[in-house]
Image (tube, rainbow, N blue to C red; front, side, top):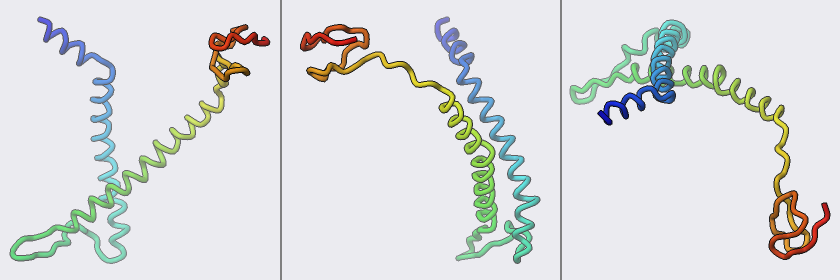
Amino acid sequence: MGVVSDFKAFITKGNVIDLAVAVVMGVAFNNVITGFVTNMITPLIGVAGHENFTALTFTVNSSTFHYGSFINAVIDFLVIAVVIFFLLVRPASKLEERRKARQQPAAPTTKTCPECLSTIPIKATRCAYCTAKLES
């Protein structure tokens, strides 16, 4: 019975559920970006010469290499990277900067003894290391 309860505890942890949601959202996001690249970006690039990169191939010793599919994959990757950077990474960085700017620095809890340069509690009136009397 311990294994079943351990498994139940593992599955119901927040980070496992968050990971599952992230994977599903990633797949959905990938489908959107792939559709965007296939239907919008590739035809724009196709104006320069090729409308369908998947048809681009070459053959060596009866082996066919579909380098057009690789070009599509590279374009997909670059568009996804640009979208993630501008829609997720950059705004998150800006929010983090604003959050840090609003935080006040924590009050110090230690000070340095002027005699022996040891770190001691801020409320100490005498150094624990050299026993020097400290001013408040």
